[in-house]
Amino acid sequence: MSETSSTSGKERLWNSEYLKVMTCNFLLFFAFYLLTPLLPIYLDTEFKADKDLIGVILSGYVVATLVARPFSGYIADAFNRKTVLVICFFLFFICFTGYLGAGSLLMFFIVRTLHGIPFGATTVVNSTVAIDVLPGSRRNEGIGYYGLSNNLAMAVAPSVGIYLYQATDNFRLLFWISLALAFVGFLCSSKVRIPESEAKHAPVKKSLDHFFLTRGWLLAVNICFFGACWGLMSNYVALYGKLELNITDGTGIFFMILSAGLFVSRLFGAKSLRKGQMTRNAAFGVIVSSIGYSLFAFVVTPWSFYLSAALIGIGNGQMYPAFLNMFVKVARPDQRGTANSSILISWDLGMGLGILLGGFVAENAGFLRAFHTAAFLQVGGAILFILFTRLFFERRKLEN
Image (tube, rainbow, N blue to C red; front, side, top):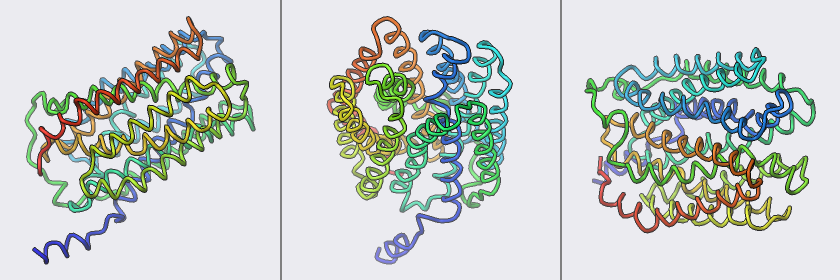
């Protein structure tokens, strides 16, 4: 027993392949979310689109992502993951050229929607490869840190995009930068090596639980609530700050504070994940996020605007990796791809609904009411987790 403990204790978490996969994930999300807060402004400025139409156009990629992800999980479990990863990342990279050539709202909608297919597939396959390259004794902890790469990108990229736009007033430059970052990510994905023991796996039979993790259905419903809040907030915060608070240059600071909260939260949360304290981390995260969204929506001042960013960052930094670990824990080893696709499907479904709902409510009742809606959804999701989802997970988790 002591020999086993000693061996597992020496297993390296930060091995070279894990670092490559983390870099791929960061570049994937950074390239995509560099544009996220600016696309509503771009569509309004370039095409004079109203808020309802902006919501429909921006949610198009979510629909495509949702269609792609169940099949991506199955493909990641059934075929050579390295080959699948490289193909998906190349398609993700090449789609950025479409933004440069889209000269009408219809063309932009088509490009944005089609981009969701490789984006959804690449996120699933890359996160599954991350699990493969992690040593078994450090897997819970490693999954927690892995999520930091995309959450950090989702927080930092919008602030960088906003800063670059304010400095250059040039949307085409931003499209080129995203294209270049995606290309670097593609090159990095081609260098990843999967351990022989993980690369060879038994053939996967076609069945429903290899397209969606039915054992984790309540986890999926719960994460959908939080995805809706994130989608609504991240897509409309720039317009909200400009119209409600007259903040024209502070949205970048908002996302920087948010990213700092995510980073600090992940560092402290990884130790408890290593000990298996997933439900405790998730409960802390959903409560802190609820306070953050409520402050954001119901106290309309500059100081509450920035403080809420820190609280939302801290809360999501604890909540998301805990949920990802819970999805993996209720899945069999041959369902790793399915577990990853299932949480991402649920998150993106929530994001899509949040974008659509935010655009509809903002158009008819104003942005303030839209963020009231986000706060209510977050609190509702927190109550659902504490009363029901936590116990649901404890009953269904597997020791594998």
